[in-house]
Amino acid sequence: MSVIRLAFLAAILLSVALTSALAAAPVTLVDQGKPVATLVLAKSPTRAAAFAAAELQYHLEQITGVRLPVASDDQAVTGTRVLVGESAATVALGLHSADFAPQEYLVRLRPGLIV
Image 1 (cartoon, rainbow, N blue to C red):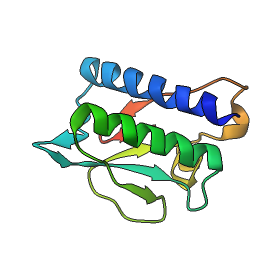
Image 2: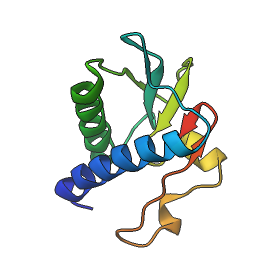
Image 3: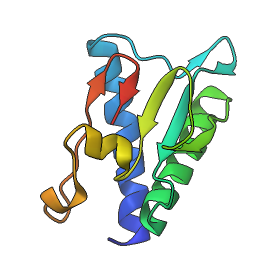
Image 4: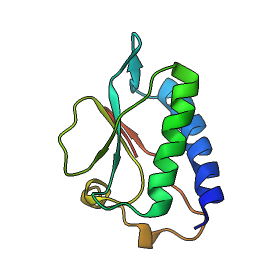
């Protein structure tokens, strides 16, 4: 998957996640100017996933004025987790990259979690 397509995906994810979060149970990313969410990648993410997380981080910072931290899925994080790309955390949820067709994406909201 090209880097440009993943940047586009990051923008779509951001808009869908923010819109869906308003309609579903609240998922908090920033509270009173402080990050309360973490972007989570695999311990050894693909280049595409790392780029998508960086794009998402950039756009969220432009919207909120707050830079969300990035962690690998083997690190303990508090608050909302935003899972980007395949990782042990997404596999534990039954989500595998190989199950998706090219240009097929998933955005899923759960309390304290955006996939």
